[in-house]
Length: 479
Image (cartoon, rainbow, N blue to C red; front, side, top):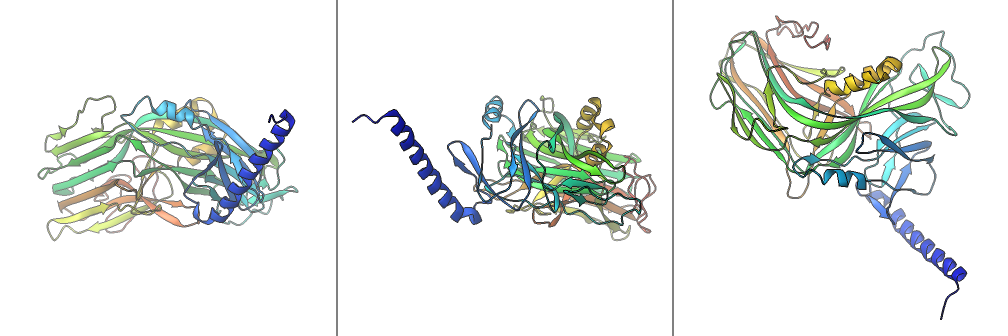
């Protein structure tokens, strides 16, 4: 029997509706267990937003641009989005010798509680706005227009926008060497130094979106989980086979790896209560895409300098040891950890930090790396920093974030060890950058950049008084 075309179309529609209905019924019963798992129907990713407001879903592309995938208002039904991951898979297939992480889509949203950003990782997404510290409002401040809600003391955003409320101000993909680990010994304060810097990046290493927003003197920073890396791993150990005694007034070593990462600046429609004008609030986000320095390396530091024992030091993206830092700056608003060390007592362990694989972002399952200068230069060259001064402040608080998470058959992580004989009273300085997670937890992510000083050089802390003066790298730490 031949079925008429009209009836065939109706039958097809019924079958599709039945399929979607059964799929959505299954999905509805499983939202509580799908935060970390994606759901796909007919090539479309399915997301259930929990919360309220208007959303815009963006996705970075290999050519450095960012595509708007979908805009809408949060409702009771799931959202279907077609994500062009094929472009990344094609791009990544060209070079199997690197570690690469697919980017996750990013959703920017506004509602009656403010403004926020989330990574679409999993199929159930909770939309929680930025938690913004409150400050006293100036007497001359203007009220928010009708339909707008305050975010911080200066800006208001639309809680129920109709269109054109968010866009991409700029997007850049950059590749450059960046210092992942370092040791600086100031004024010959240590003798008989022994150290080990070990870093292992593999398919259990995850990339994170690090998001920064400046709200007129109030900066907020957060981390959103992305995807795990895939490809060739990196296993690097930089250590002293014996002991060394620095002879220079400032002795420093930086372990630099080549990284490809994305910097995106979103712009959200806002009302400036100081000027009484409509403007855009920039939101800056970074995402590590590739670790190009891969393979196995063993580097020994001797009294004569670093020597490669295993691995090619002259490869295109080989790790490099330098005496100068390869980064833009230490992010502002970092916690400076200071450990006082007395000259009495002989040899002792000054630093012993190691990671532990964990299912979530924690202080022991993550590291933070400063962004490089190239990203800042690229945004400056196209006029973004002059037009939106807040972007520069956001670049000064964001970093690159990696997580070490549990995965069957895979490990990743770091170990940083330092032992020496103090020659004078000194302090061991290291940093932690506080990132807010989705549930408003504050996680102190370590930066493996260590300085040992007696406090007699600019930017370093007096070991007895704890007073720190202006930093030699322009960071201006006053703690």
